[in-house]
Length: 314
Image (cartoon, rainbow, N blue to C red; front, side, top):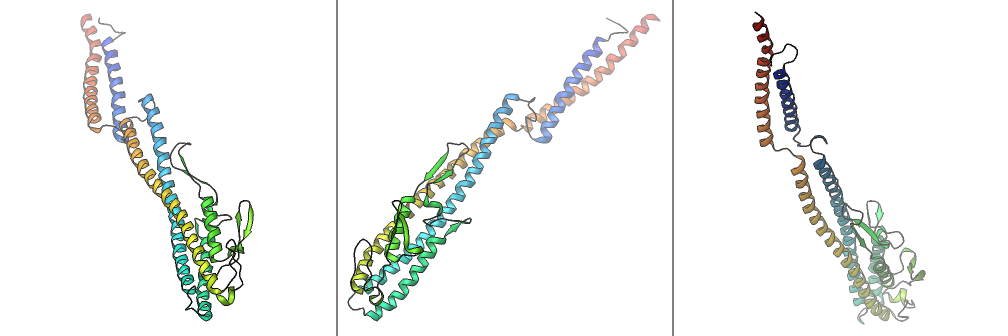
């Protein structure tokens, strides 16, 4: 129908151009940002899923850093205990040498000097070894005195417990008994305080020293001989704590590897939802540009249809 008031063809062409412009704008936005979803209007359900996946992936990234920091902390403690083992082994060598009848009191006095010096360093390591400003092995306020909880995932239930407090207390007790009562000469034991008398190997200094539990009160040779077993027990106690720390660190290493794998797959899943396919979207943009050019040309033609009415009146 030819009409001066209503040009149906023009209206149709205008609607087509509007839709094409909207689609072309969406394609250009996606190509410029690299994302298929730039607002909830693009894909409401996809945006919800992708946001949840991104939050999970972000949480796992933090958990991965947690595991690395925790491993470093335990490696610090385990490294300190490695040196404690070395010191105790040297002290056991001295005690073994002092227990021999060929050693004189003067020899034992010289050995005692080194023994006491090593005891001081044991005290320093156990009391002061720390990580990030927090002591680790101190039996009064060290990190591992109580149960430690590691956050190993993005969820509240993804935690790991490490409780070596009992083993640490036993280690302190055995070291104190073998090496001497450093750190005030006391250690918490079963809710109370047990004072351990300093052990040693010098006949001159410790001939009349009574060592707790074994009741040794004899000559320097007897004291040195008894000290051998106490040092052996201390070494075994240190090894037990080191073993627990190593097992926990190994587990955290596996946790890290698993988190890395899950995080990679989660990021890939998020990308499949959010990221734009440049090949497909470039093709869509080209198609919309051609449609826009064609629609514009047709709009020009439909606008000339009103002039046909005037030709009928001539």
